[in-house]
Length: 319
Image (cartoon, rainbow, N blue to C red; front, top):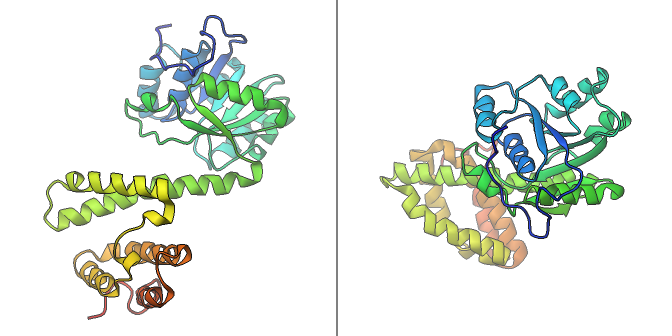
C-alpha cells in the first residue's frame, strides 16, 4: 500500500517499527476528521485496512489521505478491524452503533473510539455490551476538508473520556496521532462541546458577519482590516478574559450602540438580532467583571432589551 502522508509523532513515543501492538484499523466515516485520523494512525505504524464513506468528497479524501485503502460498507469495515474509528455526525452515531450491535457487527476484544465532542461513553454501550473497549477521543480542532487539516493535528488537544482502566490506552492512541490528551468527565461532555462550539463555530459566523458589513460599507478587502484587529482581540481574550474587552459596551457608550442599531436596521436588518444578542451578553459580562459600572450598564441593557426578540422595536432602531 502506498505510504500515507507523514504526520510527526509525539515526543517520547518509539518509532513505528518498534512500537508494540500494531492494530488493523477501520475508519467509519472517511470525512474531514476520519480520514485525517486514519492517516495519523497509519503514520504511527498501524494498518488502515478499510474505510467507509458515502460521498464523493469522502472518496476523494480517502484516496488522498488513505491511498490504497478500500471503501466498504460500515459493517464490513468493522468486521475487518481491531480498532474502529467512528467519525460520523453526532446525530448519526447512536443509530450506527446500535445498528451494528443489532446485526452482531461488534466482537469482543475490539477497540472503538468515536470522535464526537457531544457524546461520551454512553453512546457506545451497545458495543461495550458486546465486549468492545469503548473510548471517546475528540480532537478539539477545526477541520475544513482542506489539505492543511493534516498539518493541524500535531499538538492538537483531544478531549478524552474513558473508563479509568482504559486511560493508558486512550493516552497512547492520542499521542500516537500526534495529539495532546486531556480528560473530560462523562457528565461534562455536553458542556465541554457547547464551549467549543461557542468558541469556534460561532467565531467563524462573527468573522464572516463582520466581513460582510465591511463590504457593505465599501471596504473591498475586509480581511486586511480584520486580521490585525481580530488577532489582537483573540489574544486579549485568551490572555486576559473579560479584562481584554474594549469598545463601546465596555465604555457604556449608549449613544454609539443606538447609532449602530439604527444603521444596521437600515443597511443590514438581518444583522440586528445577532448584534443585540452579543451586545447583551457582552454587557452582562462587563458588569459581572467590573469593567462596566451598574449605572452605565443599565441604560445599555434597557436599549438592547427594547430591540430584542419579540419586541415591537426589534429590527429597527429608535430615531
